[in-house]
Length: 85
Image 1: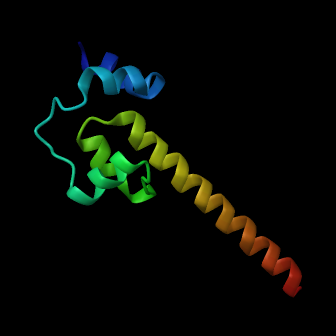
Image 2: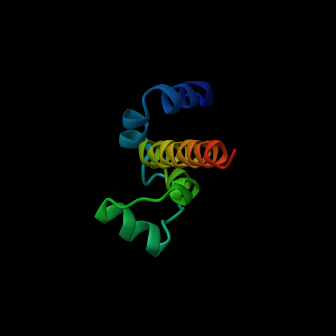
């Protein structure tokens, strides 16, 4: 499969990409990330390690989680700013 096709699949169908390519690299998950993955408690900072291991779907989940946390932090700051004004 060409690199372009892999990148397109990674962006549009992360579940299929993960099913095809997870574990195909020599990169192993750090123990703490592996424990969080198995227990369903992934954190935003886990995205890079998951992606390096070929677990694209889980990496994208961590990135969405990070974006949600950032959005919430901004909303909280805006609310606090309005209350202080």
